Amino acid sequence: MPWQSITDPYAIWVSEIMLQQTQVATVLERYPKMMKRFPSVAHLAGADIDEVLAEWSGLGYYSRARNLHACAKQVVTQYQGEFPADPIKLEKLSGIGRSTAGAIAAFAFRIRTPILDANVKRVLARLFGITGVLQEKKVSDSLWQLAAELLPRSPTQMSVYTQALMDFGATWCTAKQPVCVTQKAQCPFEGACQANARDQVLAIPKKIPKKKSPQFQCTVGILTYGNAVLLQKRPAKAIWGGLWSLPESPWQEQADADSKAPANELTGMQLINTVLANGAVKDTPTLFASPVTIGARIKHVFSHRILQIQAYEMPLNANAKKELENAIQHGEIPFIWAELGGLEQYGLAQPIRQLLEGWNRVRDAAESDQCGHAVPIDLKNKP
Ligand code: SF4
Image 1 (cartoon, protein in one colour):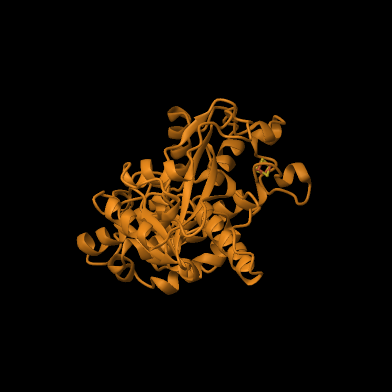
Image 2: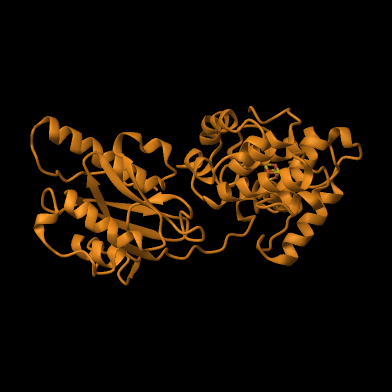
């Protein structure tokens, strides 16, 4: 892995944040691009947040990108561009938790300090037969204490010890297929492992029953003028905070989570008036270059909720564009007209990017067929 066997705290920190909620294979692909675009903490601190969000696009959990940017600024202003070695100071920086602080301190500075990511928690819980729920404070405190007691005496061993512990959890003592169960290899801790001795390996750590995710629906408008589409900036504290997105109606929870037909959907015109223009745009067909049509519907699965997005396609003519701009310029939400062929330069939420790129491909195909009207598109629903 490009982030292993290095001592640059910046490079280690970026990899730790990327790996927090993203699969290793994806990080392997995206990490080199991130490092190329922002090769140092000074480059990252000096970048516009839009650039950082664009580079992060598709990785999800965008608060990580906002914290990354904020933390880079803190390192530059508070520590003259040098990460502190003290894990207590590291933990005070934006987006750095206790375990990440421990990893940076251990890898970059060989400080004797523990880490406790999800893999390490599982390994320790099994080895010591801890049957409680890991999220409970009492259990978490005892795991931190164990992690500290187990540290090697010599600081020079901190890097290899920490990496080995993380890798052992990620590849040998995995959640569903630990080697002692699959018999693919002999675990070096088999004789000492409490969970193994009590035949409780798969029961530790204790799982909390998963609640059914609530389902929401919303309407988004693909408002186009020529080859440009109107994008709005999302509020910083909302989901997909700070990213560019399509104008969208408020999310409505659906009582029947299995329903395929969301209730109370806004029409295209209602969307323009209620969401964008506060009732200021007249409902007249002459405003549109061609009739408002229903576009794609996609389903996006978040970690704790499901969102169905219904898109409306609204090609605007010059009058409509002017009237709309006049109406929304008085609002507080920034908007831009983005070229459909250059969307990669904008930080867009993944489902919105997927929706727009799919819709644009179909539009191009329809135009080359001289079809002249929008065609329904069928996008694969990816979480
Ligand atoms: S014996 Fe099994 S559960 Fe225990 S540490 Fe080894 S792989 Fe993990």
